[in-house]
Image (tube, rainbow, N blue to C red; front, side):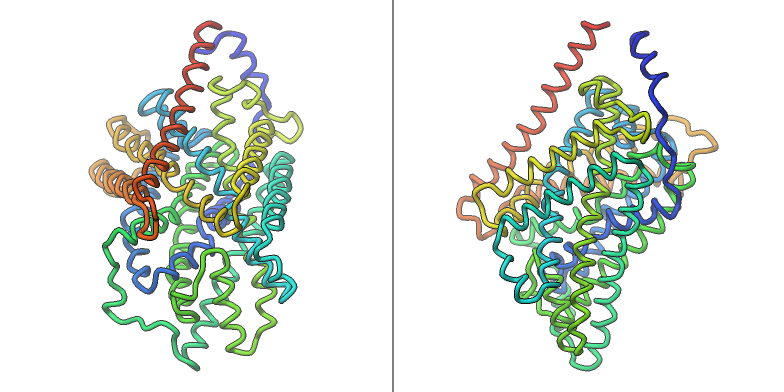
Length: 475
């Protein structure tokens, strides 16, 4: 229960601005869900990835999208995942779901911006390639854009959404050009990869365990738009339409883009940080349109900026709602009187992302920092999805009004889809813990991953307990 003074503060808080429309939200789902770096990661594993994309689509994305469609219609308030989990299980699980989600996204910001920095260097030819091993360039690129993204989102939802909208071109245009060039190249010169039946069969061994979890990770994010429920015009109508449109686009782009990149390069020649641009430059040189690689490199850098901007703007709404509920400092729940944005939550989240970028780069190489940042995200990122799918199952017992959009097929289909999503997520968590075959100390690697996750969750438990005790004393 809130005290009378807290209720007075709530009534005096400026309302958030509902400025996100269907087009804005569709482009948000594209820029947050479609990252060209996952195309390079998938292509590096060979043609069997095309089948893995289908598994990830059916086992994770379809159940996730169905749950988001119904839960966002049942509870279209600001906070999304936090609100859904709170309605199903109470304050403590809701806070832990939000805590692990926003903490796991902190390494994502520098990781995706490192990818963008490596791609941008291709636009500057030989001079740019001299910086490929310079960790200072990558770090400054990440920090500079995090500052711009943070300030832009504080300045208003209109400013933030236009950064997302423009950045969506950085994913749509490069992948469209990649597919078009690959078709022409295959017709003239053949394919660099042989797409035989046996090559399309995924290898079910420990070597590919982390890779499978990474592909599932690429399909995450469609829940993020609902975090801004009170900044979306008519969210019950807008979220389902935008999610279906955006999801269809980036699903096709992932599968077709992976096939196109394998046409350009054999999987052994694709690398995580700059693999996409290597494929593009090879295609452009082969077809004698080398000049096209320059704008493509800049667009890919824009795609990375858009991914960081989309997640920073949406995920910062979780500490905002937790601040309103007084599980974080009350300042996190403040809305700027002029810009009508949760400026304290956005600012703190942006600063935290910058701190993680600095700490992640300390004492390591560019490639080492990139790999560390990506691996840090996977395990803790999936924990909130367990709560999301469990909340979907739990809330099926509650009646839904006529305004609520239900999963096609009703309660039975909803429970089946949520169960599939829950089991897929649990399996992905197990796979992501298993170290690769090149790990010299596999037991130590597993212990480190599990220990770091326990520390992260334990910190969230401690923050919640301190806040709960303080709330009881205040009451």
